[in-house]
Length: 110
Image (cartoon, rainbow, N blue to C red; front, side, top):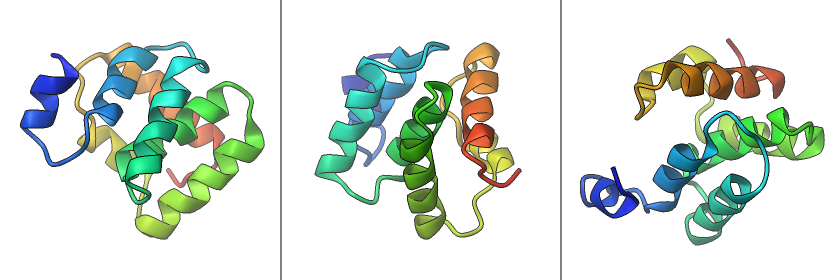
């Protein structure tokens, strides 16, 4: 699914979809840039914050992960890693496991 098709089905900007599709299991690099771009245009973009949190944590960027996790909980005080699993847009179980691992590393509640 391209980001253009995904964005036509949602009110979210395409960047979070690109971030999800491109991040796979490897942290760092372009996916972090995409999440940051999405946040620059829409500061309260929860999906982009979740991606940024997971990517930073998996890349060992603890300060960035903590900052993003704080913003996640500011926007969604009852957020849990289990909820992220219900919200995900992919059926790729490997991606889902690695994504959730990053959220856990950032100390988001289970």
